[in-house]
Length: 587
Image 1 (cartoon, rainbow, N blue to C red):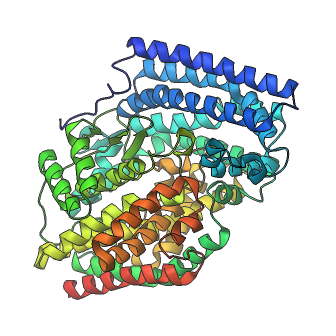
Image 2 (cartoon, rainbow, N blue to C red; image 1 turned 30 degrees about the horizontal axis):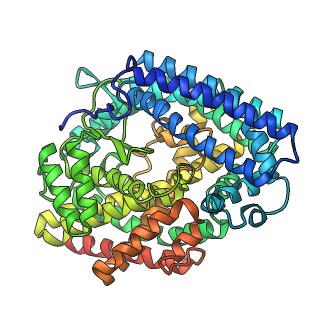
């Protein structure tokens, strides 16, 4: 129960007859998609509403099959990147899916080329459920290339951006790190950032930096080619920039992003106060070294077994909502979680929803620390979000990346607030620092990642950015965000080489959504503290609305205007009060 996840709900193995049966069904669905597209294009006067409904129903069937097949294969590879059988099958299925590229482009064009969404939907129940989804098709119509060009892009991407992304995953998962005379992996060495022994943290940091040159050239080529591809395609589709494309595809206004970033910049000095106070407290001088940014302080060195983490989380969240606690209990008992770091397993943590199964799978690299328990709470927050969007039809399950971090960060805020409030003395200091070091990561470090990615996008089309260039960009980004809170000689120039968020051709700027999620969740949690149990149904309704609403509409459900700087300042003021409390305790 406390070991690796079970994927049996999907398939019991690659030789499971159901796997072969679903592959056959997928092939049939592909042919149906092509046939539907051809028939509608040959008969442009066909009833548009009925053809749209046929398209939606077929896409539902298609989506469920793809989620099961590719989800299963990608989860196997996340647990072991050396699983070549799964990798080969994933490549084969992805290649087969390219057959639908032109058909989907044609269907989207035929759906959106006449009239308005309102005229198409009318009073039809199915189309009304998909009104937001259809609206997205209409909005993106003006950015669509020709049918042939869109189809060719999907096919070329398999050996382009997608392949570079897989290369990054493979290189970082298999990188050997020399530490204390032994070989270890990147996930294990990065977990030592929270070791209570400063010498261990320093040695791990130096070993990590020494390992990156082994893969830096290859990873740099991957980053250059992914970002160049994204920039080229954004321009071809008529977007002003990749950021403009990201915001439109995320259903978020630029004024919302600008308001949030402006407030964050205003509060950077406050976070630097925290970093300097922490540096003084741990005897590191006036500024933190990188390897001290998430160092534990105080005397809370408790280690949790997986069973203890299980019961702690269930008890903690039962006070918020019983349906949350019940879901967490299921996650542990029904083997949703892959816990331990090991060679070949990808680093970090993630949650993958299993569409149509009302379950999720969570990968973590558990080390028994409270931070690991907090990470579990975070990922289970994603699962809780998915639980409340399961009521939607299959094509309405996806929500934009800004609100994607809301439930997860809300969970982190809840668990840390409870833990801090119940603690005293050195334990309270330790927990408070754990909370603030996490917030510091998603405000200060995330801002450096945003600056880094912005500059890489601006430069990669005209020059090949080699590791030296990328390290230079990263160090300048860290200077702009961390400022005098961080020792300039002990920063992390290779942060671009270990963060998977940069290496997606389909998802750019996956950095500021973490800051959005942190501050939005803190604002929501403040409301929960004021309203108590009556807030929970409102929160659940907000989560349900995320796949079928814009960012601004979702926030408005809680009475929040995210386009105004004032909201973000209120959330940051909560952070400032926590920093003042930390400084007082360290004195």
